[in-house]
Amino acid sequence: MVYIVCLTTGVLLAAIMKGTVWICCLLSLLLLQATAEEEDHTSVLRDTSHIDETLRLATEEKASDYAAAIQTLRRIYHTSIKPMEQAYKYNELRQHEISDGEITSKPMVLFLGPWSVGKSSMINYLLGLHDSPYQLYTGAEPTTSEFTVIMHGEKIRSVEGIVMAADSSRSFSPLEKFGQNFLEKLIGIEMPHKLLERVTFVDTPGIIENRKQQERGYPFNDVCQWFIDRADLIFVVFDPTKLDVGLELEMLFKQLKGRESQIRIILNKADNLATQDLMRVYGALFWSLAPLINVTEPPRVYVSSFWPYDYAPDTSRELFKREEISLLEDLNQVIENRMENKIAFIRQHGIRVRIHGLLVDRYVQTFKEKMSFFSDPELVFQEIVDEPDKFYIFKSILAKTNVSKFDLPNRDAYRDFFGINPITNFKPLSAQCSYIGGCLLDKIEKAITTELPALLSSINSGKQPGLSSCEATGCGEKPKNRYRKN
Image 1: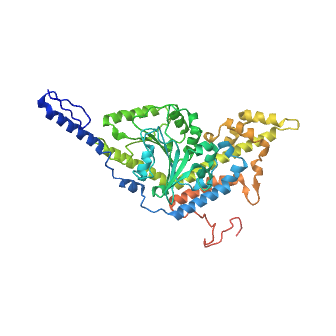
Image 2: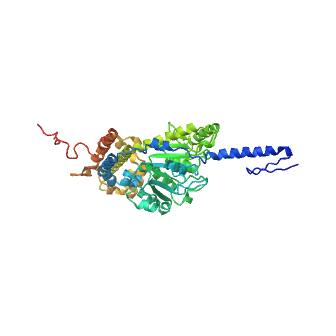
Image 3: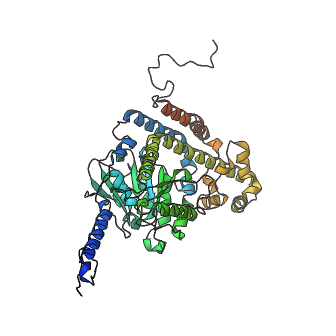
């Protein structure tokens, strides 16, 4: 017997008989060819010209119109909404303070999901950072332990979280409230890129179900909620090997409640599966997420492979390409509608501030009505706070003003609010008026019903949004007094 060992592919083949030498070599060549074909698609880079075309990165923006609209929005917020916000300490109820940096910031795209599903690889792919010294680190193991903010800058540099929080011109200064341990896990990366001139990416640590939240050293869920509240688009990324839903992922979807319109589900690394297996994985993904997303319309799911290498052979590459273009169009819509979204966000914030002011005013009026010379102020107000329905606090707001019951805050929140803010610190709305500045309620209602909708209309119609009617000189005629008799 003659033994021949073929080590070309690392496979030990023994030829028992002399006449089978050629069979051993043939098998070795076939195995070598199969291995080469498998590695071929991971060495060939795919064409990415469709990214620039779909996102229209070559077109120049009308910076002057956008800047004028931003200045008008800032003026409306500071003159009509913020005075009531400060007078009735709204920030202590909602813990959401709007800064100038947040008003002027670019749209934020947030990436969430389990570990090593391709979140960082997807950002590298969209920005063309593959094989560059500035690409986000990726790997099969959990690699991202920080919240990484990728934003535009004149040169490539990293920014520490402490610096980002201290810079009032940025929108990240409120993150200081999560403590120094978190700021050490926050990092910013600035780089000159056409896409980053229009959008900011936020990469988050992957969800690891077998790790306790306390081990992170900072309130992970609270930090996620902060970014979720400010994100214009939220990509929740999965891959075929990580479809299970644990406690941490379940908590994350609870935090996403009410933001379903911003959520996009991504099934990444889809070219690792055959078509039949992909259909089964797609169904398993919906089966896992169905209990977590309680909406009538299911979220949009994109199925593709978001990395720079070519798709695996014998997969649905045309489908993956169309899905990728569809996702890019979705991202482009967010970029093009960023001004409209900011106006809608400020208006929604103004509605909440107005409701809060009306409720505090009602608490103040009820307290004054129930107080007598012999009454104990603490006992009287404690009864009002504990049983607001008994005194028709919330029902009176619904009856007298155009307020939806779905916009009313939680009753228990006001028990905590007045626990740290005595009722005697607040004046009724009727006393919040001045001869020059006008009344707080009138100004915020004008902003909600007139000024912000007019600014939105001017954006949609392409008119210059900076001036309304004859605020500036040059209108051509004097304003008429409509109360004067001719």
